[in-house]
Length: 308
Image 1 (cartoon, helix red, strand yellow):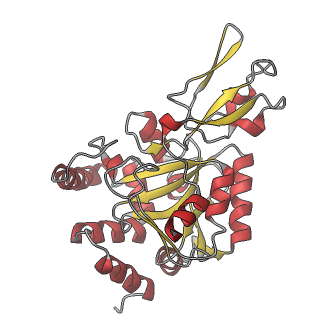
Image 2 (cartoon, rainbow, N blue to C red):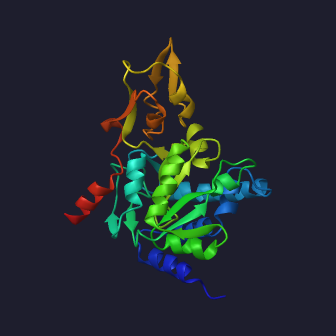
């Protein structure tokens, strides 16, 4: 059978990319070609999950063997997060990322993504966007709705999911991508820009995540540091706060508690997603830049730096 055009493009990009192994190629192809099987097994929601445990153990061992051969990098955890991770983005940043109209190459973003690999943004045709039914949500018995909330950005990734998953993906324009982001933001879901070693070692998607369905958020909560802070932290104006508790209920990272009637934000748990900000009817919460949490993924700054 002749490979689809997007498959040939994916292989060609791999061949042109320095430092990517045959393991990376096959890993990425399996991940993109069968994402529902891949994710359902990873979160233990597939009939073959037990059988797949041995496979994932072998993949993890091979992956860690590769990482052990590399010099230690700041933020390296020795876990799967080293090669597969998300960058938390407030709505404004995510909106700008899906409205970029020209190609962009920004490599080795250590200040944005503190991981040893998969920290490049190489956008080819960023106006080519597909929305894919979320593999994490579809793996759940009672998933959050709607399902079509995963935004695949740029080539060869958008064409790959459109050609291989025509029943679960469709092409959209930037305006619809923004509308999806804004609707998910109103639902209190978190925007993550995802990067993966097997997906050519770079950014490929914006997922809109909830703690009940998202495998990455659950892994992060269980001690695997898969999510990098947005570079912001939520801050409370105590003169406005009436401790109503609305923000605590909306926090996907369980970073907000109340002690003696006073709101307390755990700066370690808070990843600066901004979900709590519009939930406060008294405008008592805002995001504050925190240099200790790394740099935000600001597309304008990356474009300026790439032009210099």
